[in-house]
Image (cartoon, rainbow, N blue to C red; front, side, top):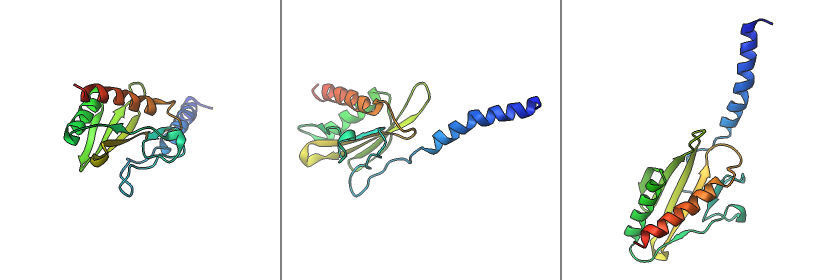
Length: 151
């Protein structure tokens, strides 16, 4: 076996797992029947609209002006280095990128003004498990949101 063949074999064995991993990538989330996209069965997503208790999380709550709450939510996302990608009619989608591997996670928010609630979903685009990263992100965002809304 010559060195060129050996290099090709090494590249194949290094590339194959990466390609398989990336093929598990999900699409960008979007609203489904007026609600946030459901979480997949894999443990890499949390949502306040989830019917699955494993991925369920409480929505954000607010009293008073929905406009102020929405503004505080956006400021909280930016404070956490999130990038707001889309915003329309009480719906917001932002992305967060991991420092080490540059994985992109999606955050969605949907306001229900009459109930004083902001539903939230955070999910990984790639991989099977997120090791609790999305839940931790939502709880950190909730903490920042609650501090900022009470100023």
